[in-house]
Structures are given as C-alpha cells and as structure tokens.
Length: 195
Image 1 (cartoon, rainbow, N blue to C red):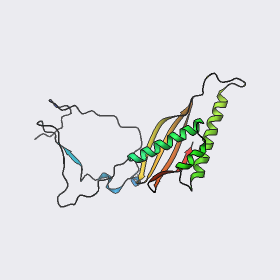
Image 2 (tube, rainbow, N blue to C red):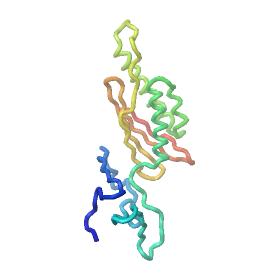
Image 3 (cartoon, helix red, strand yellow):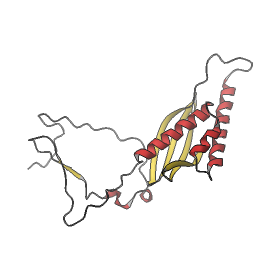
Image 4 (cartoon, rainbow, N blue to C red):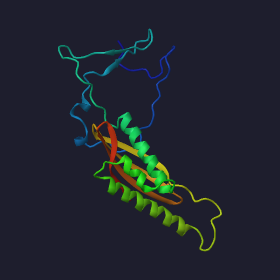
C-alpha cells in the first residue's frame, strides 16, 4: 500500500498540472452554505498503478443519499446572467445603447436606480472623452472604448449573485458593483454602482 501520491507516474496516465489560485477573496463564513465543507459524498480517486484511474463514491454507511453540498462560487446560469448584463452595461457606457435598455433586465422596483447609474456612467465617460481631446480639433481617431479588466463573482445564497468589475477606458480605471437576483425563473439586476 502506498502512502504518498505520485504526481507523474510512469505509464499511460497523464501528468497532473497545478494551476495558480486566482486572486480573489474567499467567501465570508456567513456567505457559505453550512454543507459547503462536508465531504461525505466526495469522489475518491484510485491511484493504483494498474488500470485506468477510476472514481468511486463512498457514502457513509446507513446514511441516505442527500443533496450534494453547494460549492462556493457562482453557478453557471448566474455567471451567464451577469456576463449578459455586464455586456449591456459596457454598451451603455460606450454610447452604443441608451441607458433605458438596462430597465428590461432590472427588477421593476429597482429599475430607476439601475438606469440612473447607467446614465451617470455614460455621462462620466463622455466627459472624460471630451476632456481628452484638444479644444477646437476633431479627434484623429476613435476614443478608446470602455472595456472589462476583471470580473469577480460571488453567490452568497442560491438565487442571488454579486459581482465586482474593474473597467478601463484610456488611462482611467473604474470599479462597478452589481447584484442580480433570480425572480420567477429570470435574473434581474437589483443594484448597480459605478465608483
């Protein structure tokens, strides 16, 4: 019986690669589900040298199979909803869409605040672009668009996702925070803040 794990054993198995941990803050203790640390239904890998690697589930004896623990991070549909809303926000900031288009992806009672933040952000980008061009001259090239530098997601509870976004335009970097909640099988923005 082996007591250590071989990282690159000889034979047909591929080597295991280690990737660096992404730079982000771990979720707070109150943001995790109580079962997030449970390992009762964790897969055990077979590291024996003969045969292909197998995965086996070893549930504790006498316990019924319950729901799997919720992993920290955002679900796939929450991530997709945030990326869609973020794409729309960037188009508003760049002037390709009117800020009123944010209303249809917002919760009705919060839509006015979300649209107001979109208007303020679009005005801020326009002011930065006007200040960057010389007075009386037509710009020689198009101004640099607003782009996303980094997106960090957190799902504090099922049905709610929060995102922190780093934006850049020219030499200026901004931050944007947003929250989306799932209502009636649809993700809607409840909060949008540009800093």
